[in-house]
Length: 114
Length: 117
View 1 (cartoon, each protein chain N blue to C red):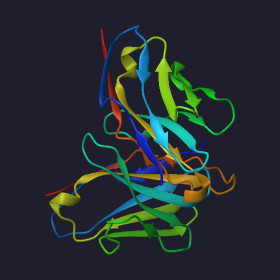
View 2 (view 1 turned 180 degrees about the horizontal axis):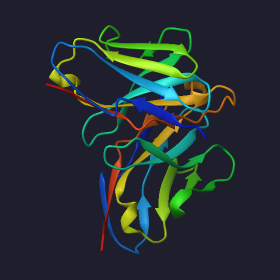
View 3 (view 1 turned 180 degrees about the vertical axis):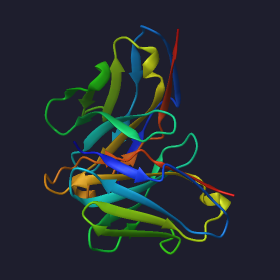
């Protein structure tokens, strides 16, 4: 069975500061890993994905994430936060054996202070 | 490319009535579609997986007679909430996989806000 743990339901940073959102996963097979962003009353937008290629993945809006198998982690980072980054972020895992069903973490609300 | 739409975006219905939500893939053929439910300030919970032309597979704890899913074409899946009650009020989101590319990636719709009064 797959699972995702996002440490910290709420992260608050200042504008221009580093953003670090943590995600740990559990999977019995090589996983596919995703980060999504959700703005209020909207669907999910894909930020980036890991699919067993490069372990450092670059996404949209300046975000990137590094897959660390030994730590079963896939933390999301951005060097400098913008006010527009304020949103809910979800980490998710899937694998071929589950028909690529996504299992989501509980989400992390990012607030950016001026 | 890879756009998924949902209709309606918001719906209010009275308790006891049924409501249908449509999920369409606009520029690709979706052999597999997924339906999620999201409570306020919570994560997405997978309700069911539907493959075109076959019965949906429901997750444990989801009432299949309450939440009817039909995936009759490669571009359309519908979720019907039957005899809705206030506790069914939620944000419902669909996603779809592109059958032509056999991609693992899911493309999400914008969601439907259901309020049952």
